[in-house]
Length: 198
Image (cartoon, rainbow, N blue to C red; front, side, top):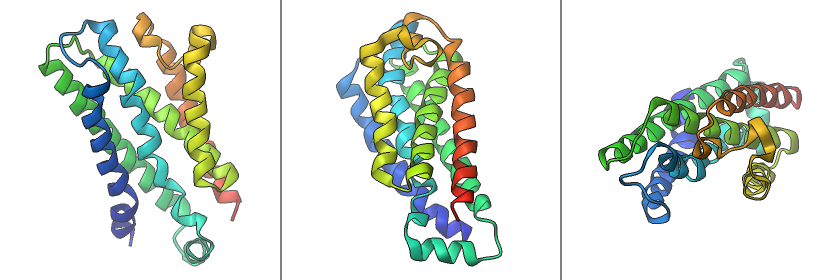
């Protein structure tokens, strides 16, 4: 049952993410970039994959019939949600690593800090989406919250301090620790909220 669940709720976002990554070279430079310039496509475009990949965590249970069925089973639904999250995170890390490798092959100065920073941003944005979805029990609202936050970063710039999404373009990497920590806490909070909603 779990294998079937992952197939239906994780693979579709994965393939959508692959399509989005294929569009990134059309939107931003991905060749012969220094370290700060290499952060631009990773932070501004690749990090958005977190919103896509962490979308399906609670989505099936938003249907009342499916929710009733899941909660009537002996297996704790938290185990199902954790499996979806872990699978999505692994695929997210693979996608970001592969795209970073592609940039490296094209002469970009890619470091592990850049890769891990992009992953931290993706987890943060995806966890915002999870938390909003858990609170509102609505997929559309779940998308809007991280997208609004993303847009705010364009206007507010580094006034957001440790929660500025594009800090690596300015050569600052410490905010990514804050982003990752906040992302993991938001994901844990989303699980607790969704579990209590039963």
